[in-house]
Length: 170
Image 1 (cartoon, rainbow, N blue to C red):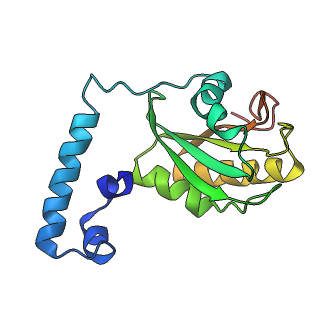
Image 2 (image 1 turned 30 degrees about the horizontal axis):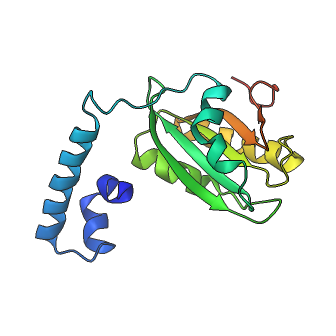
């Protein structure tokens, strides 16, 4: 549903199997839905700290049996626009490509992202691969003008912020 709301007319026609007229109507409906969602009664959570991220997604991620990588997409005020699944891997890794992380951020017009993934082992200690992908994604974000604010690793009952650890400059 979120992807439909963010789809442009060419995507609706090409990938949605719609005619040009149906695509235009679909865009109108999606715009109306976004306006409704943006109404003051539908207040979005705001993220200021790694604890906020852990509260937002930690409970859902701590017991997953495979590694899941998500991007929390934020507005300029750090309101959560969306939480997008980027990749699902195996027990100890997931293949992450900057294109997949930032595709959703661009679609949602996000000003910043916070990366988050779980370690199925329960140990939230970041790996060398976690540090490498964080640096790679932060560089891609700089090129695109979308700041990577943090990368939070969720374990069993605890989390580690790479920004707090000094592994993410800013």
